[in-house]
Length: 312
Figure 1 (cartoon, helix red, strand yellow):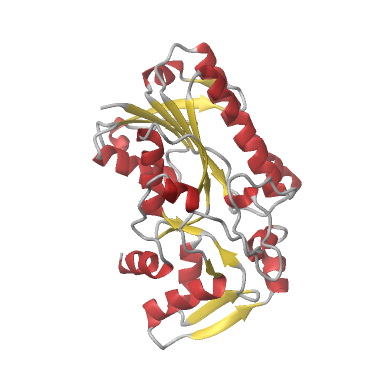
Figure 2: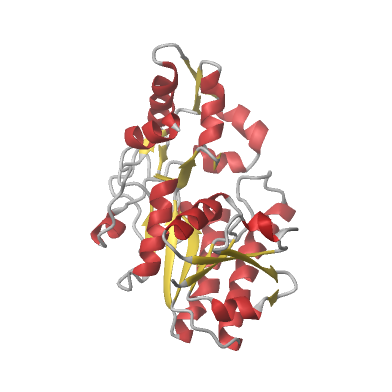
């Protein structure tokens, strides 16, 4: 079977995607800053580890030469820390320099890479036009001038040169990923366990989300299907408001035994700083292009997605 090199393979998405690839018979090389202390830590003979240094712009060239596909996920977590000036630089540089290192490696190393599938994010888009956006954002819409919009634009532009190396390139602008293993969902679940449905701000802001299983399947489809090329929104076809998501989760976990509680904007700003702007932003993003490409969602609705994740 082909070999897939994954940058950021030990992160939330990378871990789930590695499991799916191995289950389908692929060999996986996880590119990271260090290797496990013991080979047994790889958990499978189908998984190997290689190292790179983004700041130093060095990479295991042998690993690049062994790859049939590259899935590029690496980047400092956007929501992991408050957005200080230093953290913003880290978020931007980790994406720009990581992509540059991949491009340089493919340019200099003999390789057989057929396609590069790179992460991006719906942070590319700005907020919905008030009071609601009648036309969801599509892939051809321009980047928002905000920090995340600028970051996504630089991120995508930095990987584009692989097309000039005769590599098929697919970019997946990913929405809010729902997974029990991490990300946004555990933060929603925590107050519900205590009987509180914590609605953020007005709760009217639209969340363009995607179930982790569908996202991983999308990466595999983008890799295997040669018709996929360019930019696709990796979101569910049915975005929901923050209020809808929160109350649906509360009903599934607590039945009628919960209290809806709005968390004021000023509290979120105090807790999260500038990042609260993104938490409160409404962004309705279209999944039409990925559906028109033939992708079938296992969890197209928030009811189906939360039903699966809560039952886990």
